[in-house]
Every structure is written in structure tokens, then in C-alpha cells.
Length: 404
Ligand code: AMP
Ligand code: MG
Image 1 (tube, helix red, strand yellow):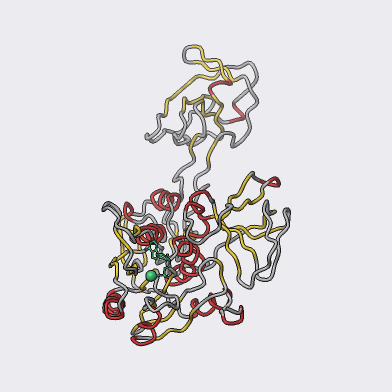
Image 2 (cartoon, protein in one colour):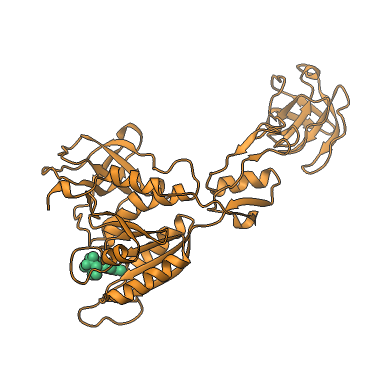
């Protein structure tokens, strides 16, 4: 098959992103359920975080000008965390703990390791300066500022930040509802014995995991027989139920491959076969306006094509600002001697870190070898018509960046 028959990865991405209309419906969920969801509204800080100046250490709060070498201060009060302090009596020290609020009139905290305590007196053994060991009110977030922007996907740290602001009901976008259809007469569900000619349905589970990581809801998950009728019925039903239909297998040119034909007959096929390795027999179109992404059948192709094409589409539909993942250039620890007309996404592993980092390739890049992706930490890109010598820079995307 000549390379010019295939649509380039860049053209395919431009094509599908143009059709990725963001899902606009929003809902409010409790903080405990917002992980992985996309924020629907800008979040402004209702009041300063932390709400008051507080101590960064266990020690003694003082006014720094009261500290004179060799002269002890009386300990006039004690402020455990969680209590409201009284103002500092001038010329005294206050026993204070990490996180305790700083009494009015104090402007520094001396670590307890830097003092000698005798009864109610404390002798300060170190220099003390204004502001020392004090975490300022609002040092994390100050009232009125934008804490998190609409479109941000909530990770554990965003969840914690929302909690620190006292937010409880969180406005998020509705999850994208996805139907997963595996095609293939040879497929058997794990947990049952295999008969000759059968294999276990792998893609169903890879896709369920990918979609969960992507923050989508799987609303329908079926395995189809390789008949025109079964494929048509289920594709039409899935398109009526979901925001996105993802199929695996049955998009090639064999007479048992029905997905592409049904897409043409029941809807529109707008893209077919991409200059990508692995993952060439990829189809995209819609049935009654519901997008259908037809992934290839081979398990490693499913993973790569989902990450490269499916994920940017999903991100854009999720209303997120950056549809494409950020990559980094790393020197290759592998070689590619025969240039290809297709862009290759190599299951690869980043070794080392910083200036010493490099990227190595799993030796068997067959599209049927899924263990390559379990060994790998991401994908390295070999551009079209390019050979790679060890040491040449290649773009590397970590799985985390591809899926987050
Ligand atoms: P197809 O495009 O349907 O001819 O599938 C290509 C290859 O992928 C064949 O070897 C299929 O057996 C295999 N395959 C298709 N679907 C799955 C699946 N869900 N799990 C594992 N392998 C599959
Ligand atoms: Mg098949």
C-alpha cells in the first residue's frame, strides 16, 4: 500500500479535533467525588489560605526587638494549634507550636532547639529577625485570586487545594459517556476456557482502563459477532446511547471487517487509514452526529491509537485547554535503519534523568505484543521518512502525559 493513500497523523488529528465539540453540560458534585473530573467554572479564593499568620516550627513567639543577648524572657502564654492566641505581652515570649496562630504583637518565632528553657524563663541563643519562621496569612492563596481555571482536570493536589479553600460542592463538566464495542468471532471473555481458534478479549479491558483514566464513563460495553447485521444493530444502538463510540477490530479490508462499511452505510465515514505505526486501519466518522472511533484490532495498536488520536479528541470534548500532550526531546538508545512512510510510535522506556536521560525501545514492536507497553513508560516518535541513529533526539511522551 503506497504511503500517499494514508492520511497523515497531523491531518487526522486536525480532522478529528475540528469535530470534537466540547460537552457543555455541568453538574455539581461533592468534593469527595470530584477526582478526575474537569472543572466547569473558574474557582476564585473566598478567603486567604492560610487564614492567619502561623508558626512554621515548634518554639517561642517573640517580637524580635525584645531579644537581647544574654537576657532571658518570661514565657507568658502557650498557644496550642487550634486555639485563638491572646496578644503578646511586650517583653515576653509565648510557647508556640507548628501551625499555631501567631499572637498579635509577635513578629518572629525562635525554634525550640535554639533556646534554653529554665522554669518560666527562656534564653534565646540565636539571632532573631523580623518574620522569621512565620508562614504568612494568604501565602498559599490570597482572597479573590484565581485558584483553578475552568477546564482543569482535578488531580489529588487540586482536590486538596479545593478543600483548603473550604469548597465542598464542585462544579464539574458531565463525564463523556462512551460505548466500547469489541468485534471478533474469535473473542472469549477471560475466566472461561479457550477452544481452538479462540483468543481472550483483551481490548475491552485495555479500553475500559484507558477510559477510566481519561475520566470517561463507559455506558455500554459489548462484544460483537463479525456479521453486518450485528455490527449495524450495535453501532446504531451505541450511537443513540453514548457521546462517543469506540470499536476495536473489524476496520481492515477483509470480508469479516464490517465496522467501516456499517459506518459508511448508517452514518458517515470521514477518515480511514492513517499513516501511523502501529494502528494504520483506523476509522473515524459519525452516526446521527455521534462520533465513532474505529480502532484497529491488535492490542498494541489499540493502546497507541487511543493515546495518539482518541485522547486528544476526548480532551477537547472535555473542554480542556490543551488537547495535545506535551513531549520532551531525549536522545535515542535505539536505531531505526529503514525509513517508513508512516509515523512510528515506539513503545519506549525513559532511562536515567536530567541531562543523562535517554529513551530505549522494546525489542519487539509487533502490534500484537502488548507486553511491550507494560515494559514501556511511554511512546517515542520516529517521524515519517526518518532513520534514527543512537544519540539522535526523538520526541518522547510519557504514558502519564498521554493519558492525564
Ligand atoms: P481485525 O482487524 O478484526 O482483523 O483484528 C486484527 C487482529 O487483532 C486479529 O489478530 C484479532 O484477533 C485481534 N483482535 C481483535 N480484537 C481483539 C480483542 N478485542 N482482543 C484481542 N485481540 C483482538
Ligand atoms: Mg476481526
